[in-house]
Picture 1 (cartoon, one colour):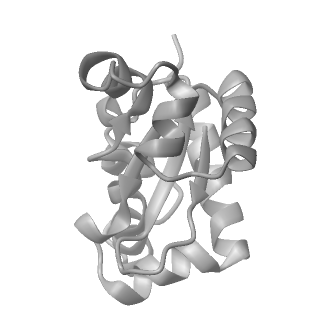
Picture 2 (cartoon, one colour):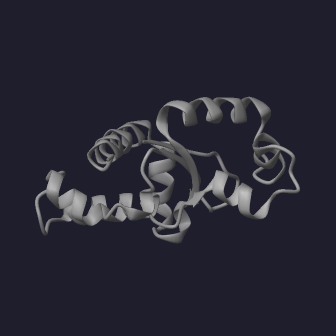
Length: 144
């Protein structure tokens, strides 16, 4: 699993998530308790849930969405270019990430968190690295 925030001019805080397991079937609250990323009933646990839950919920599987609703685009790459307005270089990079990290999902942090936290987890490289370490473990634990 890999979390990649996307630079955005607005306050939507878009991100990509690459996962071999559908992130929406993962109960991140339960995973935090099981893996003991933070002590139960503490601020740390509450903070982790607040930070990670929007990454796992409300994401869209881009290939499924493309297949179901956007057949007017001749290729998946064209869909990413015209619908999500990604640069061709970015698209190539994301397609490579997809090959090694699993399906490509897309979401917005604004749907589940406040402005300050959303901006932190899209800009702070140490926090992004920590998020990726946690979600890699969660992905590994939830594979069949």
